[in-house]
Length: 410
Image (cartoon, rainbow, N blue to C red; front, top):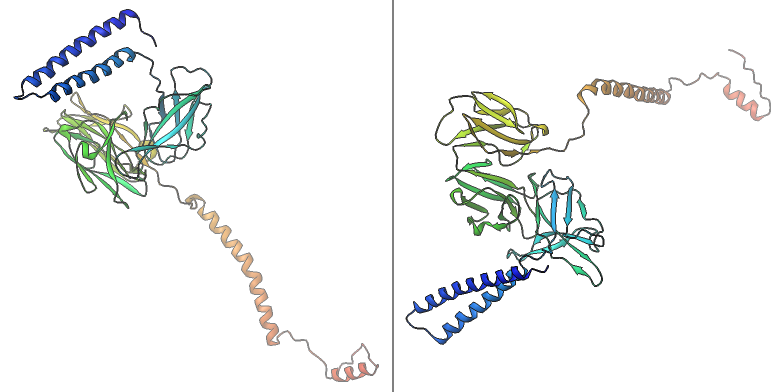
């Protein structure tokens, strides 16, 4: 993208002004030293030269079109096993682009380097600018790039985009202590990775997912537990990550410097279990009506500062917040984890199944009993036919050819 002559002159003027300021700072630093060597002067001039080239490149091309595509994901928070739709948009959406899709996974070396892992069916690119990931079960980062033309013009890789999963996998999980999604500033919070591996590390990202880093850069890591000070942190998403690329459930933690927070579980609530949400003031007690909201709808308004749900269902999933005397807490998402149903008969159909089973049993058992009795009686001679005393003689007559079919009664 070309820039006008006026813009170029304005940028050059700004460049020289900035270089003059930098030169003044460097010379002041050199004069402040007791001894100044030729090497110091050369290093200072070399530094000015590098900075000048960098700034000139920025001023000349800083307004140029960014060739990096933008990836969007929907939904950004999902239930385990749900599908995720990825979209890759470029500055020039004309025909001819082929899109390549990947997810970023940690390098096994454990040095916090990441590599691209191509998604199935995208090694040769796709003509569509969208891609559907089926059956995702854990937190993942996705990216894309595009190519077209002959010779091939390739864009840069997009900034990775997170898809968060709050459901707890079987391999490992992230636990929060105290177990709640909102915390006051100055609270002490611990995050622990629990699982069958020793190479888990606690990760943190901004809610929009643009920046992420391990606990060692923003907290104190002790074994598999990360300790954070909420005075020096802000709202963020936390999860555990292994060197093999596995991820645990993600937890969205909100830090409040106000007077009121909502105490809600940081991890998903199992369907059918009970849960209690409560409103907490930093230093006061409740003296009037407390309002509880579910997805911006009032579901309780009385003097109780607790909201109790005896048997959680999927319909209870959503955003919650509380309000008291004009003050309002931040809202937190409560996730409900559904346990796969075990195949079992419906209680209403149980009598019918019982009757059918009894009838089938009787129909099968009676013939078996009759057959058993018949065979037993046959073996004991109970049904043996009566023979006359002349049987032997009759047999002899039969052999001699004098057989009479009529027997004379004795």
